Image (cartoon, rainbow, N blue to C red; front, side, top):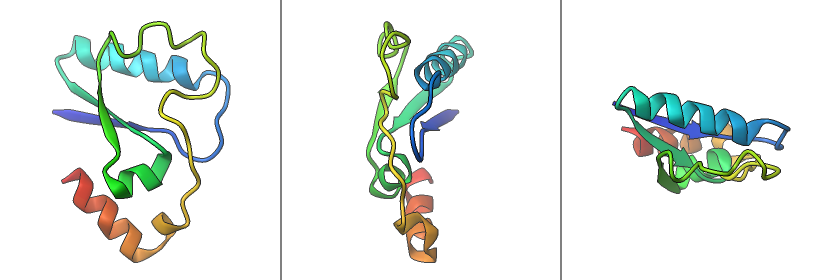
Length: 89
């Protein structure tokens, strides 16, 4: 099973810690963890990377989010949502 992690909108304290915790839990369960860069714009465009324990090592000291964020006007449209759905199938 694959699990995608996406951070959208503005960043907030604790996002990297949440990403790290999700990745560690997921990999412990044998799940494939995928990070989606740049929020919903990245989802629409297929901008992703594999996440494992090594990828998230040392990120809790960093501000923001390692995946970056973006607000997405395109995702609010039916066409943008269709494009995003194609990426996750």
